[in-house]
Image (cartoon, rainbow, N blue to C red; front, top):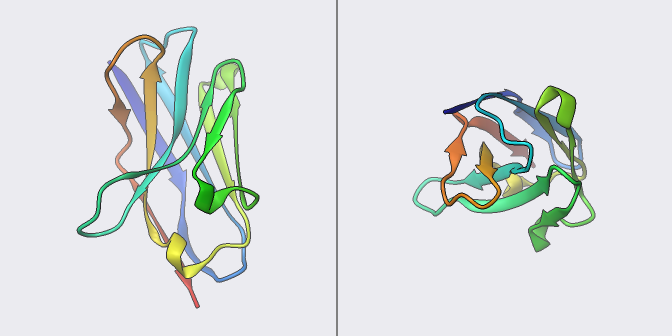
Length: 117
């Protein structure tokens, strides 16, 4: 089992920055993928960004150049720095963990990000 605890989020004005962090605990594999997804009411949960233990990253096109994902493997923590936020970035952001090679996702409880125009 893996437990994910998120922090950060909140209300920010358009154009501003905001940071999220998520720490994993429990049975952590040496090779894993951590990342962030987001969801708005009535819509599916979409990829924001992911990062592997060796530092390979993947971003949604909508956030490229504005968001940066990073991680501290020693702390099993992933970070998402969000800059130049837009109202359309408003969503519940979920931390995700997956063992590489295992088709199972662990999710955090979600944290609300609201960008006011």
